[in-house]
Image 1 (cartoon, rainbow, N blue to C red):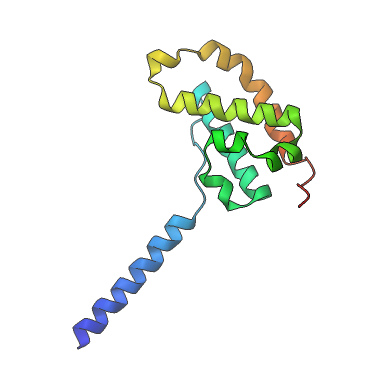
Image 2: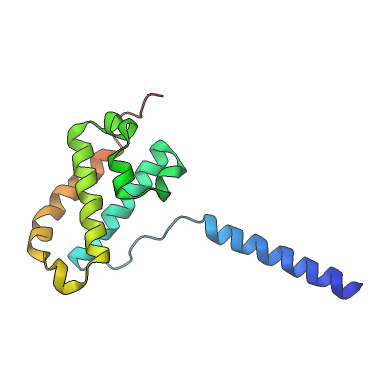
Length: 130
């Protein structure tokens, strides 16, 4: 009986630990030395900003689903929304295309300053009206 109680206690504690780990926010990219790391970090930051503004359901959405969301588009305005979708699409391509196929480091270097500046203004936009 004591062994069963002890096993149940260990099981409950391990479930709590797993649950806490699952809820913790993703950690930012630690090394931003490369353009692709910077791009991926900006995309993660943009998604987290969207989650903060529009709720946790946006974390699970694909870029295509976000691009079809009229509420997000209206809240951000056309310019910000188009920049957001371009950033997320480029990051998706960068993550999932093999290195020889993506081969767009030069264009990425040109666009990173624009996206970095844009990321800073994303939070300053007024919240969406519901």
